[in-house]
Image (cartoon, rainbow, N blue to C red; front, side, top):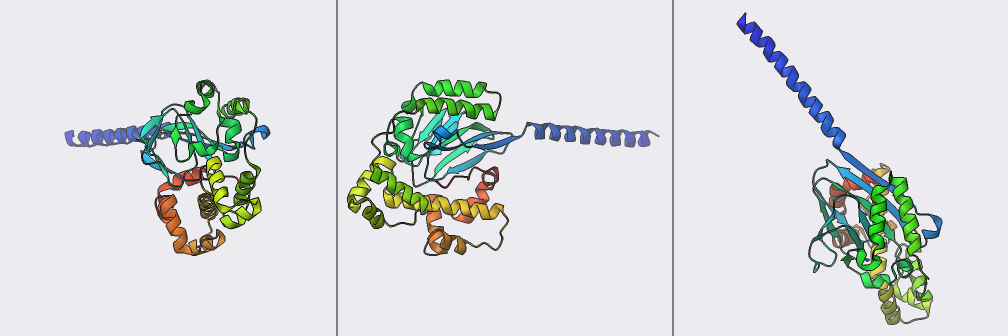
Length: 313
C-alpha cells in the first residue's frame, strides 16, 4: 500500500512540475518583445528623410548586428537602453555606448551588440538634405559616429523625452515629424553639379563611370571627385560602389523573402552590374564584412523584420 501511494505521489509531483514548467515557459514567452515598424515621414520632410524604423526587443538572445553601408546617413534615438557600438566604420574610434547617434556615409560595416534588449528609432537621412537638417554637409560626418547632440544640440533631449512619453509608434513618429521639420533651415550651398551627379548615381543603381558623371557636369573628373566627396562624404566611385551594394542586398533579400529558390547569386550579380558572382562576393566581404550566405544566416531575423527596406530615390 505504501508503494502504491508513493507512486501516486510521484505522478502528482511529475504533473505539478510539468505544469510549473509550462507556466514558466508561457511567462517567458509573454516577456519576449520583438517589434519593428517602418514609417515614411510627412511630405514636407521627404526631401530630407527617407524613412524611420522603430524597434523594441526584449527577451531575445544576445546578438551582434552589422550596420551596413547605405546611401543614407544614420540618426538614432534610443528609448530605454543605450546603443552599444563594438566597432565603428572608422576603426580608430573606440567602442562605446550612445543614447543618440549620428553617423555619416561609410564603406565598411559598423558592429552593434546587445544583451537581449534594445529599443529606439533609426532615421535614414538623405545626404543632400544634411545642410538643411543638420546645418553641415554630409561630408563632415564621413565614416564618423558622434552623439547626435554634438550636431543637433538640445533638441535631442526634447525629442527623446517626448518620444519616450508617447503612447505608441504612430505618436512617436509624429513627434519626429514635428521636431525634425522644425529643424529644417534654408537649403543652400549644395552645388547643382554635385546634386545632379548624386541623383544620377541613385537612378542608375551606381552603374555609371566617373567620366560620364564628369562630362554631365562639365567638370573634370578630379574636380568632381573633390567637390562630391566634400559634400557627400564619399567619392563618386565610392558612392557608386555603396549604392550598387545596397541595391544588391535589397534584391537578394527580396528574392529570399518572396521564396524564389531558382534565383541565383550569378543572376543577382548580372542584374546589379557586377562582373560576375565572384565580384559580387568580394564586394560583400568588403562592405558587409562577410559573404552573402553568411550575412543572410547571421542577419536573417533582421531581414524578416524589414530593417533592410529602403526606397529607391
